Image (cartoon, rainbow, N blue to C red; front, side, top):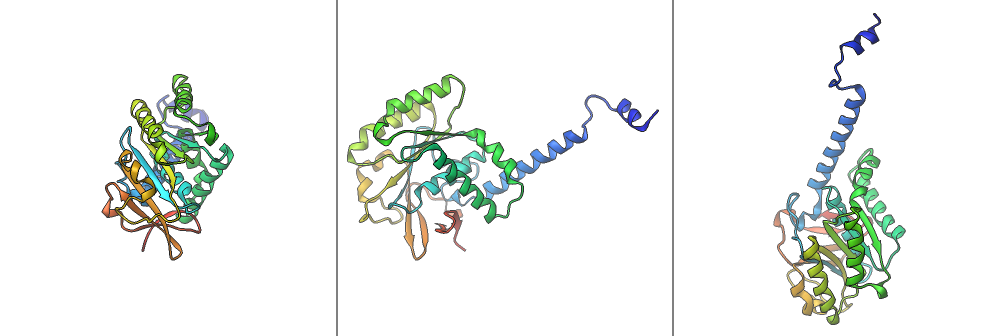
Length: 263
């Protein structure tokens, strides 16, 4: 009897093949890489690796002046959830799907370079099924239209969001009614919502203080994060909400738009 035939005869159906071992090791490597990135994540300023800063139906927002890095911050917030295999719906009111995809690809590439990660294409493939991008024209956006699109996704079993990001929604004193409707929708469908809010040029952004341009709406938000450009870096500060003091000082690197801990 040939050796190969003898080996085949002695193997039970439950035996692991070489291919099984390769698949197992690859999956284990990806899982370890995810865990490593989660532990390194400077977004722990908002919570811990096993605790989210927002509960279902709650609101958070990233506040900054125009062009300071709100979208990059939200994308990293999304990636941190995608690594935990949480479904993220990204709603953009100002950019097409392809542009939003490029944001994710660029930020993920910068993270891979920053931490000198290898073979990240497989990790990327594992998180993509947990992301869904939806776009609206900002002038045509309404809570009713968002709810209709969400119902289409969930009723057909296509996507069930566990976190929603809305980028590009204009915020003013007249926004209270629509924000209140969105809060009801978030509570009913069981997810928190993060927003990007552009503050006025004369607004002051200081830790523990709500800028005047959103003061009348602050009661609708459980967490407010401010981004402020100071001496070549973009400081990340908690304006409202509980700060995780163990996270240390955090800033946004203007070159890579990555969130980092200050050394």
